[in-house]
Structure formats: structure tokens, C-alpha cells
Image 1 (cartoon, rainbow, N blue to C red):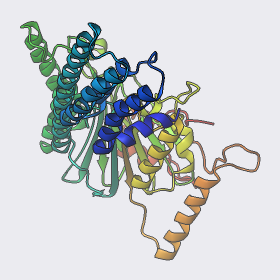
Image 2: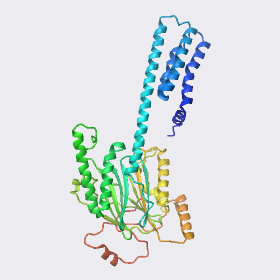
Image 3: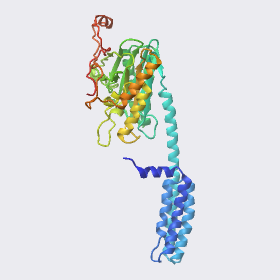
Image 4: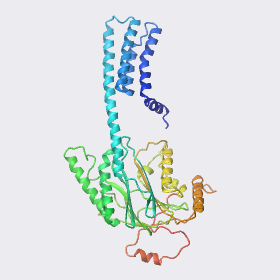
Amino acid sequence: MHDVNGERVVALSRHPLLLTVAVALLPVLLLGVDVATPSGIRMAPMMVSAPALAAVFCAPAGVLLVIVVTLPCVVLASVANQQLGTDNFPAQLGTITLISLAALAASAARTRKERQLARSRWVAEVTQRVLLHPLPERVGSFEVASLYQAADEEAAIGGDLYAVAHHGERTHVLLGDVQGKGLASLEMVSCVLNSFRRSARHRSPLTEMVRELSAAFGEEIRDLSAVARTGSCSGSQYGEESFATAVLLDLPEDGPVRLANLGHPPPLLLLEDGTVTSLEPTVPVPPLGLEELNGGQVVVDTADVPPGATLLLYTDGVTEARNASGDFYPLAERVRSWTGLSPQELLDTVRADLRAYVGGPRLSDDVAMVAVRRVPARVPAEAHAGERADARGTAAAGRGEDGDWTRRGPATLWRRAPRRTPLSRRRRTAPAAATPPVPSAAASPAGP
């Protein structure tokens, strides 16, 4: 729900001088009420609320100003009520003084914590720029865009990660999700990213890259577990069953895309005709750190990605986001209207739609997305503008006359590449078809 009152408080807190003056005027207002009312109504005890409120919203200097205003008002109120010479007045004045000093100390502690939080956020932002390198807009024959939003308010980075590496004629893409979130997950994020980049520089095959990631992750977990057993808080959240999901892509300049899915949500293949296919793995593989569940077997699938098609990689923070009714975000259904957008436009549209779906900018989990689009064949500028206008019209309409989503092409299927049949032989013997190329791995199209 939209918290209007909360927004007003936040807006007021952005003007500390105005807020301090407002709190300092409270005992003055109570003094005026005390003087104007009969002596039986005493407002002096209520003046203690002014230093308490100042401790919550004001800096120590502001709290001190409120105390300086409050104590004389208490004395003047006691004079007006003829309580100055009573036995109760010293106790009343001492109580207000003690509460005021406690409010001053609380304000100082709060201010110190806020400064520490600001430094923590700054360190997290710097760490994000170091670990999650900005992705290039163009890599080989692919356009690339990325998006990241951490759920932890104390950090600008969480457990989600992504990277792109281009060496030779091949491009590798990694998107993953490390167990845990916030600053505590940075060690594992760094481990996975460094291992991926090292394997890409060595131009390791995709199967070998997966094995190297698994080995590096396992060693890091064992090291952190050993540190935790010594009593250090570092690494205490990691144990022998810690894991990280990931999906890796091997993108050649031409030909099918090879991908390895390690317990991660399946990528979506978006064709220009509006077809959206979920690239489910043919054989489920456990995440990094849990390889013993399948004996360390590495499964690599292939999928045809024609020019103009987009691969959308995402973390579970996207599909597990809920609206006010508790319904999950239907990503595959939503992107059906946006298949004609560029990678950056696609991610911006998904982010805006996701925020509108959950009812606000705050999400319950980290969100990371990477969109990779194979550059289409060159067309005249006029035709390209017309195609983009059609794509925008599809995003605005997106439904046929019968109210259901229109299907503009055949269902896109994909399957695991046969082990005994070379890819070149299968491509030569495949019958010619008039329809657009279809992925070579089997999964049912997502959505209706």
C-alpha cells in the first residue's frame, strides 16, 4: 500500500532545521495552554515529550536546542500553577532533566549509526562497481543490457551476480544467485565471478568452465566453514550445504547457443514474432555446491537463436515477486508484448512493470536481469523504424480480437543435443522449412 503519512515524515526529515524548530515550539505551545487554562490542568509533565521526539528526528545540536527551550518552559509553567515551592517540583525538574540528557545521548548514538550506514552504502556501491563490471552494449554479434537492484537497504549489492566475457570468436554470459543476500554474500559473489572470468580468459569449453566454477565454489565454502568453526563471525552463515544457482551461455558469432543451467530459473527466448519460450533444461542439474546429488555430471543444451531474437536471463527475485493478492509476477506472459524492444528497453520496461505489480519500488529479494539479443540483419533505416513502430504497437495492444494473446509463429521447441550425432551432420540432413529457425532443444512454450 502507498504510505502517504510515511512519505510526509520522510519529506519533513529532509529539512532538519524546520523539524528542530517545530519540536522546540512544542513546549512553548504547551506553556501557552497551561497559562490559559485553570490551575488544575497542568501541562508541565507533557513537556518531557519534546526532548524525546527530538532524539528520534533531530541531530544532537537540535536536541540540545529543544532542551534549552523545554527547561525554562517547565519552570514558567510551575510558576503559573504555583508549584515552584512545592516538594514535588525538584523531583519533576530532575526527571525532565534526566530524560533530556538521555535523549541527547540517544540522538548522538543514532547519528553515529546513520553515518556508519552511509559509509556502508558507499563501500557497497564501490564494491558493486568492482565486482559487477558494467557490461558493454555490444559484444560480437550480440547486443547486451543488464539490470541490478538489491533488496538489502543497507547495501547496493546482494547475492545476485552477472558477467559477460568475450574472447576470440565466442562470448560467455553468466547470471547467478548466491545463497544469502546483502553484504554477507559478497565473498561468494566474488569467488564465482573471479572463477568465471579466469575460465573465460583461458577459453575453457563450457563443460570445463562449469567444473572450474564448481571446484572454486567448493573450495571457498570449505575455507569459510573452517573460519566459522574457529569462532569468527565471518563465514558463519555458510555450511557444507551452501549453494549458488547459475546459468551460463556460450554465444558463438553464428550458430546455436550452448547453455548450462545449474538449478537456476530457465532463460526465456523471445522471438520477434511474439513467441516466448522457456528454455527448460533437458536434465535438471543441482546448483553449485551440491554437485554430489548427480555425481558431478555436467549437462549442456543447445538452442537456436535467430537474428533479432533475445535471450532474457533473470533471477528468482523477478518471478517470485508478489502483488497485494499474493500472486507471483508472470514474467513470461508480460514479456510477450515486448519482444520487439531492444535489450535495454526491455529491461527498463520489465523493471517498471515489476514495481507497478508489487505496488512500490521496494522488492523482497534481489533482482538481476541480463538481456542478450543477436543483432538482426541490416535493413534500411525506414524499414527499421517501421518495424520498431509495430513492436511498440504490439506492446500497447498485445491481444487479438478474441481477447487472447495472438500467436504469430510456430511454437519454438528445443532439445538437448544428441551425443552421438555431430551438429554439422544434423544441420546438413535437416529438411528445409519455410518457417523461421526453431531452437534445437525441447521445452514447451511459456504461457498460453
